[in-house]
Image (tube, rainbow, N blue to C red; front, top):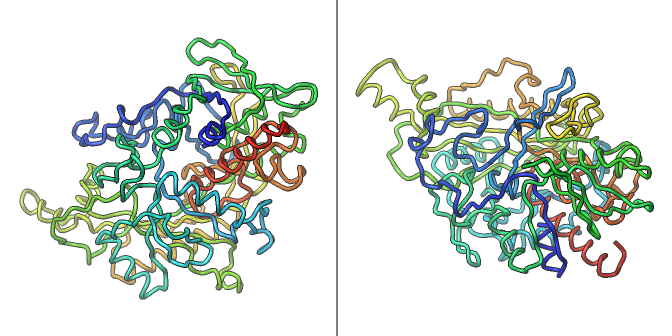
Length: 549
């Protein structure tokens, strides 16, 4: 997004990508079936989201580029070593942060406020949604802002199981179920066609119907003639001059180990929250002996992810449904935004901040794991009897996931490991992780709520609800929403970066990823990353034109 905005403003940009080149138009196996893939498309150590996942050269583990986890912590770090990064395989849920999300500390005394408010970021949300194409609807939900008229594309209709779950949750539990907001086209948008509702978005999209930067942002930036891209370049440091201003970046050619230094008037770091923090910590100099921007020891601290817990059940009302096309988009067509703001402010819930609920299930083209789960629930039998059982049960398994908000804490951070090096001889990151009391209470509430919904419809709950909540929450990093490592703040003492994404300590270094976030609300981060990146790039372009950066 930064490259798109800067080249549009008339500036020349060099983009350095540590991974390989990637073109979804030619590399996406959109219509191949599981039977066409090794192991029926199942996950392997080098393809942990399955054979068809778009991530190339990356994953939870990257050969020769490890990371470490401190004793007593659990954390996993997903990296995408490819042009376009995680935008090639993400879920594409695009929710705006709401007014309360920017002033959490002012409301409940926890965490940190943002140095900007919703009204300031709203025009940039508008710009991003118009550019990338987002479906959804205006529902008037508290702290889940509606987009202005004419921006959102029509949402797809709920699937049968979503419709049923929505009726039960809305009528009996007071939980609103509304159209999801996804960066997927349900109408033609510019020169991009609408979604075919036929293939998994996590594979990427050869026709450009969903958003990924390799189809929506990078091609028009290249068309300007002002963008150059070098792949396979692993940036590891930002050198500075005697006044503390960045002079460019240092990187290693992954193919041959050669060290390069590229000169620039300004530097934008968008390597993902943790890798950006690593680059800054490695950028040591006389001016910044603890790392660039780390004067106050804040870089790498305040690391956050999204707390999550799920409950699965077999729902009898969804048995024996007639065969019908149930593909739709990869994820869900509806979701439940946070619905208890008033009760929470009145102190009735016992925890801070909100959660949302995601829906998983339906009668999509079955995969092997689906059949295994159904066979385990089927009555004993073989041949026609087993076939009838599987036909009865197929589509009746439903998974509800609660996604909450994390409050930053001193026990969750990343730092340079003093002993372990990667294959380039660079120090790797060491992670410390701890869920706080608020997250544990949120997820305990969500697990009880989801179980109550299933019990109310007579469903058979398949999830073990007896374990302590701390043991069933997904560990840090697993939702792949890392944020907060170089958070923005009005004062340098409170965060390394100012309200524009610019380092307090170096006026020509900007950050354009979720490391900027002072808080990690219960909403997916990508839309806000892009809005902040566009806003920050606009500020940088204006500063360069004035000679201020």
